[in-house]
Amino acid sequence: MKKFILFPILICFATFTSCQKTEVPEGTFELNLNKYGKQFSIYVPDTLKEKLEIKEQSWGALEIKIGARFYISITEDPGDIELLKSDIQTNDVNVFKSYIIDEPQTLMWESYMVKPEFHFYTIQKATGNTYVLQDVVPADGEPFSRGVIENMLNCSKQLIEK
Image (cartoon, rainbow, N blue to C red):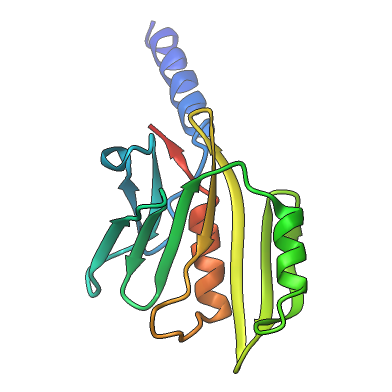
C-alpha cells in the first residue's frame, strides 16, 4: 500500500522539478517587476554591498542599476536586430570590432572608442509581450568589462513570467 502512495508522489515531484525553466544564477536574486507594470521578474546581482536603483524613464524604459556592475534598460518593443547591426557597423565614434554573440534575438559585440567596450542587446518575450533588454552606458562613461556584460546578458535572457 505504501508503494502505491509513494509512487504518485515521486512522479509529481519529478515532474515539478524537471519543469523548472531556469536555475538561479549564483550571486543573484529574483527581482519582481510587477509594480513597474512588467508581469515578470528578472535575476539581478545581490545588493548586499551596492544600492539597487530602479528608474522609470519618460520614454517608457525601465532602468535597473546596481552600483558599478549592473545597468540595464528594459523597453516593451519588438526590437530590430538588423537595424541595430547597421547602426553598430556604421558608427564612426564607437567603432565596431566584432560580434561575440550573433543570434536572431541576441547580439553581444565589442567596439572601441577610447578603449575596448562591450555591449549587448536581446529581444525576449514574457506574458505575450516583447521586450528589448540592453546595457546602459554609465554616466561616467566607464565601459563595462566583458564579464560584466556577459553577466547582465545572462540575467536578461531569463525572464520569469508572473
